[in-house]
Image (spheres, helix red, strand yellow):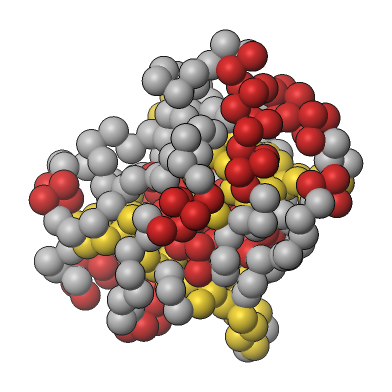
Length: 294
């Protein structure tokens, strides 16, 4: 099990990525405009699997984002949920990791809880990220080692996670469409009474980055690299911590993009204490680090 300090220390050193951040904010906003045209109109829904919808909005936003990245950074790799992965990215140090529409079920439900996520990983770790909520116009951005920001209605506000250390006072943010029963067992064990519910991993992590929530636990293999890269960059830049459910640092640009060991996201104040409780509950439920939740 890795400790909180080990997890933070695994991040790449600060890089000069302001140009990449400005670029990612711009194309996320442009993709948001595309998504909103479908959001207020109509968008055909198909299913990649029985529980995995995809819409015209996903594909249109993806085409715009990927084509812009290829034009601006032709030497970088790209991993995007809605693009075929030819694995050429595995030969690259710099890889853009994109989810053109995180929270497709929320998009279909028209509740606004979806986001566009554009992250950049360097040698396997996230170094820059942008999470944009088209329905509200909110943008979370961050560069690891330099800071995180909330862009809202023309203002830019520096982000910093909360300093809450009493777990009973913490606010848990949980999934609207992917909630697991085991989360209730963990919440009861930690004696957490306050809970927010929202879609999109990026928006959950955004709540932690801006002190609306303190903790997110996802003991499931459902997340993939495009769900996590941009949010982890923003969170880390804001002072938070993201690990798997056994405390291991998440690595990116892998052949297998699934996060088999789940996810714990916190303000970093007592991550190890939360981690020990999560390990106890998930192992009692029959899961282990070697096999994960898969």
